[in-house]
View 1: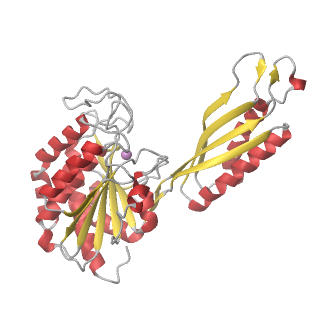
View 2: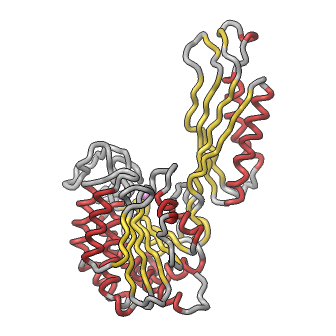
View 3: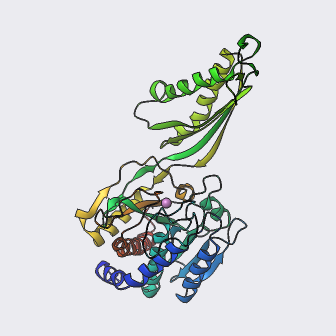
Length: 404
Ligand code: NI
């Protein structure tokens, strides 16, 4: 099936894919609770003749992998869709709005599931032309932060026997039908830090009898911004933010301790590694200067999404054949994160964006907004591009000299 035929088939299955998307949108499930969603996916894949279907990862009933084996001795490409929704009350009034209280597909993962099921259908139709195998990965808990679905699926064997991977995000910041690609880093790492600065509580009228941790905390908050402005190479992009500050209970009490919580984002893995030491040095030094002690911990969530050149080149060519050069754009660097990066730490892969933003249709709200929605006209584009990518990757990887 060539690009023209793939495009045509993607357009023909558009009504059933849209219907599926609306059904999934109306029935969202939170991270690690995507049981009905996973059963829905499993049923569809069985109907399409996929084999080696596994449902349930990380000790839950969420997540599905399945294979299409055209040539058992050929290469294997994986395609990934994330499937979880967010704890958010939907404020859209569309007919298919969420039926669950305070749960909403506000990031477009309902679209990701529908698109990958559309791709599954097209690939099954052209099975006899494929020179290898396809592994579909329907991943739970992309939004969970602390317990990544990607990480758990890898531990559960989702990448066993896979040579390369592709993943896509429908993107409301970009007009419908535009494809954005990028080689190298594209999305930042996301880590959380927390600090406790301890002094000695006392009466607000007698500071000399107490050791005030709030003063140390206030200085610490200002000082950590000098990591970005005075310690880092200005060409490296780093964000250090404070998100939560807890100190004291009453106007006349000096509290015994202050708790601080924040996050760190960057693209460069080496810079990421150094941040914990930098934060701790400042916390310890400032605490000591004010007779306090500090304890600082970093929770490592998601590495940065770093696309591999070979896979990205294949994606660019495959997407260009579908949407034309005029609808291709290089993606800007994005400070948001994706746990797709865990897959890319194991095998080569590329992560790209397909526009679903339309001002007229009101689908240009940011992701994670209670008004978020996607322009369904972007779905056939996304299906055709991913199908074309999978076919091209298998063809390229059949040549042993190709480096994904
Ligand atoms: Ni998302």
